[in-house]
Image: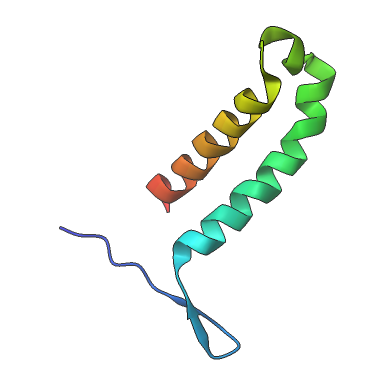
Length: 67
């Protein structure tokens, strides 16, 4: 059985749900960044920028998988 995606209508324009998932992932990641900074997230990785990008992709993937 396939999952049907409903498009969102924004100002008369159909917007794919994946665009909203990307925005929601950015919002969740921005809210998570201060917590990561307090935990010392950057000292555990040799390249913290790539680690943060990977975390964003993981959040985005979970949103697209579950919704």
